[in-house]
Image (cartoon, rainbow over all chains, first blue to last red; front, side):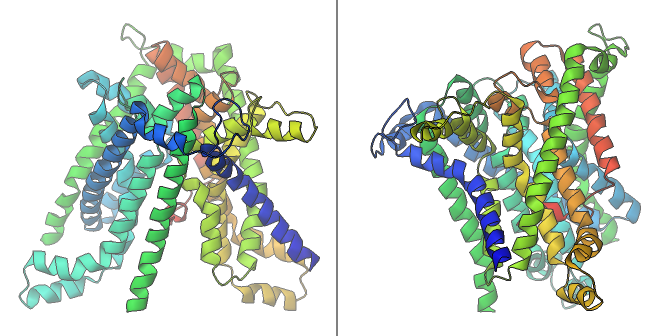
Length: 258
Length: 275
């Protein structure tokens, strides 16, 4: 009994450690006092001024554009690559997967700097270079999510569909695609997560004037913290919470239907 | 026949790898081994170990990285064990709660800690209102380690927990029937069976903590110089590309070495299976 309560206490303490910073941010986002960390009454002002702040809004917009474009493109390239890799012989597979692992294992700062060194030779750093960088580090997550699903696909059913007169495209859409769809979906979600969370690689591949939320926050942090940023964090936290809950509930509902 | 054709689907990816991964890495190697006039030199590689600033930053990075990894391991292992032993109805949800903070933006999590720890921050205000003293760890290595532990703890917890769930209760029961005490069970069964998870966790915490620069910049206030900070300064402030590349190259060697030390990790990709 004592052991049980000690265990619960320990979990609770870790829980506090993990959530305290987030709760503090959320509470302060409603705090009506600009300078000090003292409670000065309840307010929505920071939310309003957050949406009027040009810097925050432009960074928000850039982040959304980069995230969705990079996730879409990396999912397309990665899924195709998974098809190609699964058809290769053992040796080709090993080489390809080894290359796939490089950006996963290498230090973010080195990946970022290496791309910057190449990009500045050919173009100005800006939106496109950040996009290219995000696609690069997202592709491996897509491949690693799609490949196992693809290996589990039964080739004979696809061939049976062809024998029964289906066009390759139709057979793919009706037979192969339903089996790999969860993998493609989770690869896409991983790509979104990684892109949203990235700081180091964006920091080195971005040009002046282009900011994602992470790099904008970094610049602002060095100047001092504005209360609008608390409001922004709270909004982001709840967006993430909702997306995660939707993502977790969806498959279960599917399973119940079957 | 279609096997051959199917292989071409990897074409765009292969082009992408060469263009955006291999070529850029070659650029680092090129700058690391050439001087500003473009001739071959080992000066910048050597500088990583001879220059006082570089040597100190490497030592500090290794030290803080090891401390952070150790703390994460000590904190996360009991959590994984307790969670696994609870047999809750919605265990998945509880695990999800422990992972949730990880999905907050990286920079926001650091911002939160800066807010908590700073001189007139939340923790000091609370302490002051209770009539207690104040903590002043902002801008010290301790604050940086705290930030790293907060950021990387889930990376340690997840692989260990995954390994833990694969231990079948029959095995533990069998050991008990054969007379093993709880200490024996822990060291002879649980630890060896979670070894793969521990190793994944160690690498997934050690490598990012060794190479981070944003955490030390924000929570260390420019007083804690890790390798990452020196590299950043070389590129963003001094335009010393060769020196920065030399240090990056050395850092890359460190990363590869630490992975080699812990064996080629994470073959089944369990660390990335968050979704």
